[in-house]
Image (cartoon, rainbow, N blue to C red; front, side, top):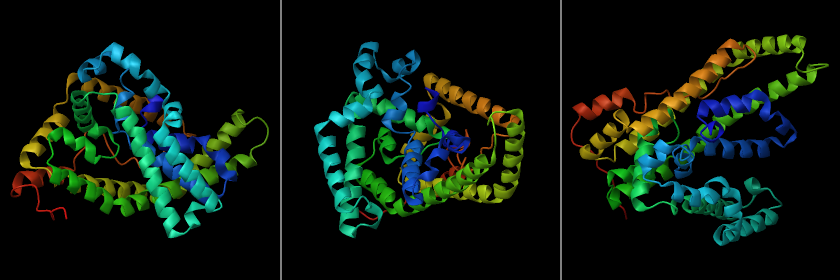
Length: 344
């Protein structure tokens, strides 16, 4: 369960903990692209699948209105998703076309023609959406609304705010269009956000890999543990400033994304969202408490072990789902939402 509900900080800890050093032999660009995909997926804690992973708890099932019988029927999708996706006719067709495009570009999509790249990434998007739909269709409309409310209430624990979660606030068609446009407009900034974070992770991992090559004998020996401790202490001093800058830029991007989306909401919808965040249902409070307990245990372990270093983009602090300055602005400024250009 812990591994399926990774926070951004936890993902960074795993990546920097040596689990990706074996990929150093890969081409840098390939490695970077694979990391970006993993990193981007880890941010999507607010997907339906991210919520569904909590359904092994009786209180969450009861809160979402999911019976044990329904949960058992979902098991194949929730816990065998790769197999379900592989056997799904739509996913299979999309995957076959993606393979064909990779072959046409000599397995180098990044340097392929603009037409091939555009088509490939469109297919990839359709594949991801279909995968999500395979999960969504297992829930009733009422359950899906409760899941979206769950996502909003969990905003304090990190992850990307997704346009779909706000549908729990009874969005108009125009608002849905506006949120989708915001997502499209910010995609270049999101890609840059991923690049900066992944490049930093790659830099740290390469340094870690180079250091490990210098160790002799039993890697777990006391002498090597002392050397590793000194290495991480030195690395922390060397890269702390860069780590802080990345963390701050990550926070700025996430705040911008949230504010753009919040501005679409009416005052009534805003009040409903604030109530879900500030006064979540009891079962959500328990989930939040569990996630914070895991974080405290992880932080305690990291602080007690100088050989464990967790730098990087820990941008979302519990209890701060909404920038405080924006909360105050909503109280003092005029009518919301801000005017938006109508859909063509």
